[in-house]
Image 1 (spheres, rainbow over the protein chains, first blue to last red):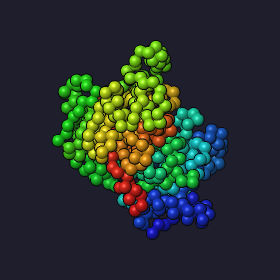
Image 2: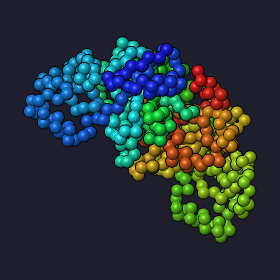
Image 3: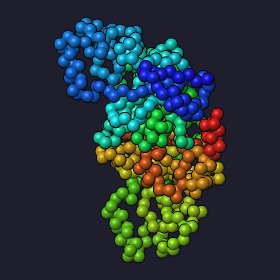
Image 4: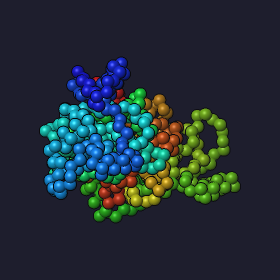
Length: 242
Length: 242
């Protein structure tokens, strides 16, 4: 049985949802797999006027969507890891998840294998689709980004980050899988830590990269289903050493 | 035990070969897998002056590397499918393989699973790495191409074509796999027929696409190992229907 979680609080049309459910089920067949419909968010970080506005409001003492803390220069504190906003928040790694949930309304899903169903793939770049994934006692941040690295040629970049340290991240392997139209694309890698910048992972291209035509081939009715699985990396290493 | 086939007749340095053998064996662990070292060929098709020269020599009755036949307008005849040269040859589908072997010196490998080891990945675009693969009673053409779709940003495109009709091609699934540096990328699709143009498959991006940074992550000492497997598509369909 498949469960649907509507991730960003909007009420979705039930007929459309059932259609997406059916399609996602056809593509990702594992029973009991959680399918999450993820709506896009137009990233504010790339809009200079809005960023400047937010910065001004911080300077004027008006709080932006994130709570602003005075700089305390505590090396234990990490900045906000939300790739959507230039958020001035900082806090301990343990409270990053609750900050992302409460302030940025990023939903969290439980389960070893989930299906991330990104809607409205046609929206212009820059656009992000973001979700948190709770698995094997840790939380991961999945970011799908539509971005124009080469002007006029938007591409899709998908990566998974551990909300934890780089040493903890080394213990895991994540897999992203696309499967449609008699084509299958799988990407497996060690997640990066959110302490590293998601922007640099994407600009380095060290992630799943899709050009527009491939994204269209894998999309269904404007939505892209990405199967996600996380394992401990012992399995991965054992395969390598075989 | 692994076998090496040196595909383009050049004598390779044995020490380098052993190193590559060891590396390829570490990456692709299946026993008995055939590893083929494939040297690059700078495509003449993209060099306008050389093409013009070849064209002139045809017009003057001087034979280019391919034998030139007068146009006979026989619908059973297919043009030369070699993506390297603007070759005026045409002939029946059954003799395409011998044309590619004899005239374009493209080697042919036998085996259900082989490793394609493309050397000198650093060479400037446009460059092609080409091999034929004999499997399940059919011959396939594997093309890896380095090309600049966006000026100054070379990308790698890999695809497999059946030397047969589109109907025959529908019976197969090919898999290309890269595996290195704790990253794994798999592409599975139905091969296209060589009667369709390899250039259009690549310009559509309906193939395995690698940007330069990913190609570097998967390369070892300037060589890229691609694991290739071909199956009948019944297996693929059965998985989809599960």
